[in-house]
Each structure stands twice: as structure tokens, then as C-alpha cells.
Image (cartoon, rainbow, N blue to C red):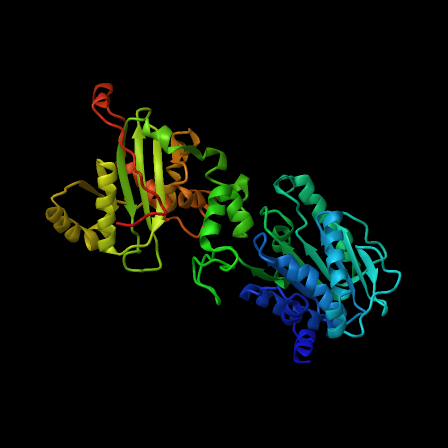
Amino acid sequence: MILKTQARKNLIDFAQVLDRGYQANWHHKLIANKLQEAYHKVLRGERVRIIIEVPPRHGKSDISTIKFPAWVLGKNPELPVIVVAYAQDLANDFGLATKDLVNTNNYKLVFNKTRLRADSRAKAKWNTEQKGGYTAVGVGGPITGRGFKLGIIDDPIKNRAEADSEVVRESIWKWYKSTFLTREDGNGAVIVIMTRWHDDDLVGRILQGEDASEWERIRFPAIAEEDEKFRKKGDALWEARFPLEVLNNRKRDLGPYEWSALYQQNPVDEEAQEFKQSWIKTRTMKEAEKLYSRCFVTIDPADALTDKSDYIGMVINHVDKENKWNLEAYRVKVNSMDLISLMFKIYKDTRFEKIGIEEGAYNNAIKPFLDEEMRKRNTFFTVVALKHQQQNKLLRIRGLIPRYASGSIFHLEGLCSDLEEELVRFPRGVHDDVLDSLAYQLQISESPLSAEAMKQTKPALPYYSDRDVAF
């Protein structure tokens, strides 16, 4: 009895009672609470607008598009519901899943009044005995004669090709404005649930619209970009299902552009990118090992040595015989002494000619300890105190654009994921530590050696990974 009472009252309890295998993470509970609030506001005659941005396979459709309509119709079987997907086939699947839920014995125990009409045989269009109804339709499909108090749009874009098509995006927008919204019965709830694809997708256009302030935006990056109520910066959204190891592998497989859009809910407008995706060229370690090169390292500690929440940008640059840069670049969190140990490890691996460190951090936090450590280890290398020369950081970073645009920079495969993430988001990204460190390479990296000197130089490349910073 207690379980039935809780299931009638709370959506998340309903989900767990109807689906014994349902595993509710904190973000599912938060979404469920917001959807409950939306339902009660509609009953009070209020207008509700919610955007939910969640990565793929993180349970957004199950709780929001399948279970929520079933719960709403259980509480109020007179309510009209419309659900929209990118295609009619998917809409049919949503409709059938919700209908099957309503037909279960457990559902009938929780809600003993809501029953489907005997003639409700279709997957995507069915009615309750109390004249409420459910309609599921693909974007662009007809909904003439059907209204809604609850309207859910779940991922109206099918794939990258559609997302990149201005014609498709405009078609979705026109259908949303001229067809979908016109079916709202008085003040209702419109809930848009998306994995983001493009700055100009449906959510992007809504947020640029005149009524943007009406919308409550619930956004969950797969990996937290800042401290949140239920997790810290850098934590996974659903650790039990998608731990950081899995997410980082996915990030590497997808590349920075798709990762940022689909998993971080932060799409990049390619036309507005200062560093174009097409400029990012890669080489395998085997290819790079064949090149005679000179090695230069740059470090941008910024405030990271005093603020433990900040990152240090690290760049190892191998300038090959064609004056092309071959990079390993990453972010790391270390204190001053650990940074010094890391510098010795990099020197052992690469025998770099010079290492450049931002002047303020070098003089204030590193130099005395580094000098002493060099004497202790009897290992000495050249350190250059890098000056920002009163130049704005953004201008320093933009100094890299000609090199990237000319195809003169290569990323060592699998060793530049942090850098690539910063490149596609610049200048609006959360981080720019690695980019700033790379910009300092313009000060210290030198041209290739002469042909005669090159013969005397052995290839030197690090067997070092941004996922292996032990020292």
C-alpha cells in the first residue's frame, strides 16, 4: 500500500514500482521532480517551458518520454498528450512502450481508474476511457485535430547530417512554430528533450528567441565542467553506468567536436570556430618516430600552483626537418615540487633543448627549488622564463592560427585530447591552459637544424601519455 501511494505521488517511485530493474541516478530524480512540478503547474493553469539536455544513453527518454506520460495519464486520464520524435518509427516505439506500461497489472494496481478504450489498438494514437489521449508523431507529421496539455519533443534531430543541414533545421523550426505550438490547449507544458547537435538546433533557436527567459534549462554534461549540487568538477554524470574511463574512451573515439556537442551539451558552430576542425591533423607515434626533430617544452602554470582547482598546461613540441610541429599536449594538476619532478621525467624521456615556463610562476614558485634539484640530481637543462609581453592571452593564442591554417602542426595521435577540446571551443571554452602553453611555443621553438647537423641528431620522441603522469 505504501509503495502504491508513493508511486501515485512521485514519478521516480512510479518508475521503480513499474520497472523493478530501474536504476535511478541522482539526475533521474532531479528530472522526475521537475516533470512533477510541471504537471502540477499545468493543473493550476500555468504555462510551463522546460529544456532537458542529456547525453546519449543516460536515461532521458525512459523517464521523460515513456514513464512520465503514463504517470500523468494515471493521475489525470482526461489529459491530452502529444509526443514528438525525429521520425514516425521512433514515435511509434515511444507510443507502444507507454501503452504497454499502462496495460500492465502493476499500473492498474497503482492507478485503478485509468483504462484504455477498447478500440485503442494503434501504437502511436490511443485514448483513455475518460477521453484523454496520447498521440506520438514524427517531426513534420500531421497532428490536426489533436491538442495537448502536455507536449514532449524528444530528440527531433536524427543524426549529424540532419543537424548540419540548414534546410532540415529550418524545416523543424517551422513545424515547431506553425504546427506543434498551435496544438497547445490553453496554457500547457512544452518539454524539449535533446542531445545537442548544433548551435542552431531547436534548443539553440529557442534560447535565442524572444521568450527564452520563460524556459527552464536543465543541462547535464557527461563530465561536470564546474562544481554542481550533486557532483564535483570532473565527475561523471552517471558513474555506475558510464564511469570516467568509459567517457574518456568515448571522448577520444568521437573527437572534440562531437564530444562537446553530444556529451557535454555544448555544440560548436563550425562557421564561428577560429580554429577549424579541418586544421587538426594527426600523426601516429610510429610516423613521428621516423622524423629527425628538435624538442621544446612549454608550461603555463597560471594560478594553478596556488589554486588547486586550476590546471597546468603542458606542451611537448618536436620540430621536424620540415619545420612542422609534432605535439603532445595535456592538462595536469600538480603542486610545485611534483611539477619539478615531472619536468625531470620529461627531460629524461625527450632530452628537450629548452623548457619555457611563464615568468611570474617560474620566478616566484619554481626557480629556487628547481635550481637545488638540478644540483642534487646532477642534471641540468635550459629554462627560459616566458614573457607575455603585455599581450592579451587571446591575442597570443590567435598567433597560432597561421601555423594551424598552413598545415604546419600535427597532433600525436591520442596525446592531444585536452588541446583539441580547447581548440574547438576557443575563445568561449571552459579551459585554455593548454592553448596558452602552446602559444608560448612561438617564443622558444626554433627552426630545424642544418642538413649536416641533422645527420648527427637522433629522433627523440616521448613515450609519454596524458593519461600517465606518474613521476
